[in-house]
Image (tube, rainbow, N blue to C red; front, side, top):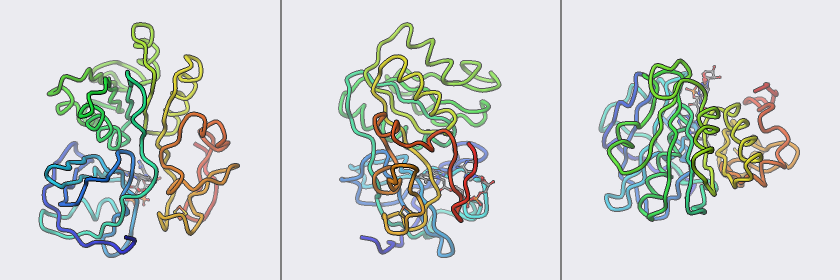
Length: 264
Ligand SMILES: Cc1cc2nc3c(=O)[nH]c(=O)nc-3n(C[C@H](O)[C@H](O)[C@H](O)COP(=O)(O)OP(=O)(O)OC[C@H]3O[C@@H](n4cnc5c(N)ncnc54)[C@H](O)[C@@H]3O)c2cc1C
Ligand code: FES
């Protein structure tokens, strides 16, 4: 299971100027939204959330934002080019609750989109907020709008949808609608705000955390979080709100490849 499988890129969708979705043939029966793949371009290897799960076509997709050398190299690939994939890894989102609010910030919409599709297929009521800095960076809005789902867009600069942060939009939505679960992935500063809202309104919640990873399978200890020592690659990346209360570094700092702490 831990040996990368070499797979050809089947389709590429240009989602925005900086985000592309890469689709592969992959046995996806047992893939859970919120899980990630270790993606190897035969030089470097990085974790990427699964953004599309199609058990009927046996396909998975990953949506990659171009931010540095690895992601630039993957963005330059064409259909038919190959990547090494291992996984799926980690603890994904649990489908709990009867009325769910899913919130994705930036490329954090990747696992949120997979979760929303999964919940929809199980006839669970889910509303979505897709948030980004600008209209150009909003992810999956067209796809969401083509379904029966209530999807809110939210931009920091007000260029589309709600003008402001998703936490501000959430406070407005929560005045009108009751939810019994919040599911989120995105910048940790955003998730910290969502954690505070969930605590205030006493709503259960699940958070997908991002930490620097090396092995992806719980061996190297690179992704351990203070003080509790859980490995984000095994016990996470999705943690419940009860778990988050025990992760003292949440919303405060994260470590880089050499273990140095960087404030969030
Ligand atoms: C569980 C998990 C799931 C992930 N899922 C995804 C995913 O679905 N899609 C995705 O694109 N990435 C995802 N990531 C992040 C990804 O693994 C890489 O860390 C990221 O793509 C940086 O790769 P790079 O080598 O190109 O850039 P680097 O050389 O590592 O970084 C270049 C610059 O970009 C900044 N940067 C690094 N990561 C990000 C980021 N995510 N957003 C904005 N700026 C960043 C760095 O601070 C640096 O300044 C995930 C990470 C984890 C742990
Ligand atoms: S990346 Fe090695 S333990 Fe998580």
